[in-house]
Image (cartoon, rainbow, N blue to C red; front, side, top):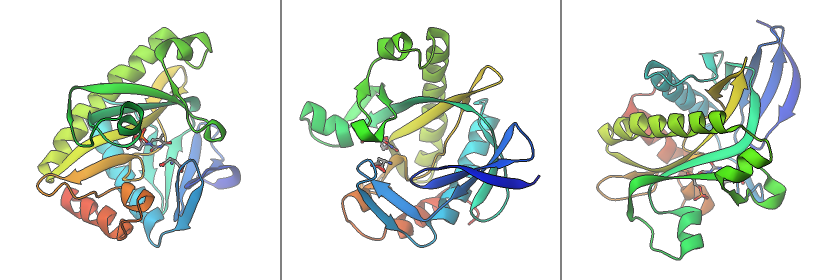
Length: 236
Ligand code: TMP
Ligand code: ASP
């Protein structure tokens, strides 16, 4: 496999073509952004931690029957993935209230949601990733009804698998964001799963162990990511 030209530079990852038209290289950078790219900093070791964290989680999901984009680790900061045609919609599952839900509905943080909620956002930084509903996805053609149903079912499955995994490590999976794409017509989980795109709280103390430490200026961001990785048994 040969890495070729950079195709796309995101806020935290860069995407490269390869000599295989069906495969891409993802490079996890140290860049850390919040508030739709308005706050950006370099955090030492983040690229490597998130690359290895993502590999560990994607392999667990694949083993549980969730089709993922992930193929294999290539280096500390790179992995090989299937080339998906991305659906520009973010799927968010919440087990506890936090973040934009708290602001939108004016409720307190940390209330358990039974059953978990499923929300959709349009992936568009310029518009601040606006909240959308299922009819928008279908009417604007971002996905059809069958694809959307599959995205929702897979999001629920991911929640079941990962809530149990994090719980065994003494962590609450508060919420998370997934992105899906099409690989030869099949809905496949894309992007990444790391503490950049989810909320994790210590079960006992409710200490925040995810990107909220960066968003809220709490400090020790990567130290928290590394502690989560160690608790899960992710080889760093
Ligand atoms: P929110 O509370 O800001 O809507 O975020 C819900 C979850 O989704 C949280 O774990 C952070 C994650 N997320 C991202 O990773 N990227 C995004 O662009 C957004 C809006 C949320
Ligand atoms: N990843 C998004 C950004 O950089 C949103 C966030 O995580 O707060 O702006």
